[in-house]
Amino acid sequence: MLFWRKDSSAAGAWITFSAICVAIVLALGVALPAVAGADTAAIIAPSDPHAPTVESGWQAGTCNAEPPEVGTECSVATPGQFFETAAAHPKWGFTQFIVRHTTLGPLETPIGELKDVRVDLPVGLSVNPGAAKICAQVEFDAEACPATSKVGESRVTVSIAGLVVQPMEGVTAVPVYDVQPVQGKAARFGFKLAGNDVYLEGDIAYAGDYHEGFSIAVPAAIPIEGLGTGAVLKNRLVFNGRAGDGTFLTTPSTCLGEAFTQSGSVYSTFLLAASIAEENSPGYAFPQSAEPPLESPIPPAPRRKAATRSLTRRPSGWRREPKKPTPRPPPR
Image (cartoon, rainbow, N blue to C red):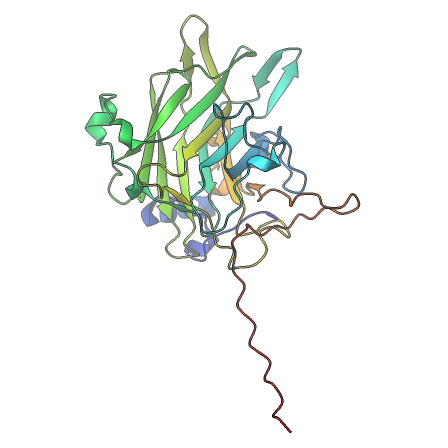
């Protein structure tokens, strides 16, 4: 990112759920000025794609191990847990954001309440909703999705008056299901978060590079029984890359070159986000006003020499075009 990847259509607008919505938002964007200082970095914790850490506000990746099978979440601090095979099905895939917040001793207070999130996945990374059994909307509404439609888990950390409440099983640590998509959507994944229905509405950049993405409308209030109502501080979405028939996630082939040489790589994962206060500001239009997005690149290559460290990596299994054989000189 200068950090962002745009679709070649719709005057360079970010891909949203439908062409009609894009046209409407673009029209509003032309008529009304963008709100200054209200980009994604205003609501999401600091994140540097050239120096990612476990505290980065935006993180994403594919992994070969996640809790409870191991004791530590997959991150740049656990490079051995990343899945690095090209054009293959990773065991896990995750996205994670941390809301910008103030810290006072053990208290962590978000500076605002998140409202909308937009994620653009790497070019070539495929999410296959047909891999698992689809949960009908009526089944989801009745909390009766079949186990075979589970494709992942959402783990939300909540802040209540600064008190950090870690993910609670069945309340803020909940299964994600492959739900029947609505007309015009490429996919829909849903989960029940403390009484709120939350959906990941999937789409594909048909008019651009065909990368996939999803958008989430974040619940305004997260009630925790016995503690009160809080706001989202952190969310980690973990998907089972081999859900259903084993082909739910497929990694890119890296046919387009090195995975990460500079900001804006097609193999990075991008985040746009906005708070309630920002979207209530005059002239604000999501996702345009949330630009530039934050970037989570493929992790740095492992250190091989003390004096060198490369930020480029090709997942193993990539193929190079074979060289043409050099003709032998004719015999004398």
